[in-house]
Length: 225
Ligand SMILES: Cc1cc2nc3c(=O)[nH]c(=O)nc-3n(C[C@H](O)[C@H](O)[C@H](O)COP(=O)(O)OP(=O)(O)OC[C@H]3O[C@@H](n4cnc5c(N)ncnc54)[C@H](O)[C@@H]3O)c2cc1C
Image (cartoon, rainbow, N blue to C red):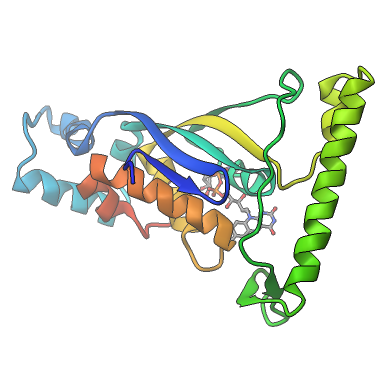
């Protein structure tokens, strides 16, 4: 697997485009307080990173930046876009684009769990084939109507309203190291929907090698922004 691009679902992915900074960026943002600078990461610097994370001195973690390209279904993107602080995003616009939409396909129609306010059981419903057929038929009907509206010269910005929430969207996202830590802590948690967990886990996998000490020190700190 290409470490910079992780495929998810039938047409989604997380791809790391570029990064700014390193663990040393965090260290030197903190060391400026004492008019000091490190030229290479040494043991004391790793200790400083751990100290900063442990004591919630999180502003040094705002300096490194990560740029990603992500493709995910709209219902997951809606959750993803709730993470706002420390992020910039630009997304494909179906006002302008009318290329054939790509639609997410569930790999399993999970059962509702009556004991959970949010979530599902890991198990598949009994009538899975009925659900698959109903899902596919409706998706097909939506795509057919979308194409019909375009044929009738309806503007793409109006025609898109018939497309389902499972349609894939694509965006470029730039965020600080601290912002990604926060997002990943919340969305790799077992309370998050399984599909968004997959994206958050992929983001962890592509970011961690670039900032190994900071990432390890900061993960599981829910107050990072
Ligand atoms: C498992 C799970 C279930 C969820 N369920 C729902 C749901 O049912 N309905 C729903 O609407 N949302 C839901 N959410 C979304 C949730 O409420 C948050 O909007 C989302 O997690 C983003 O949180 P954030 O703290 O990263 O937000 P960001 O907007 O990125 O903010 C980051 C941090 O900045 C600070 N901040 C941001 N805005 C303010 C402000 N106005 N005032 C003071 N401080 C601020 C806070 O410290 C905040 O934590 C859910 C999230 C999760 C993880």
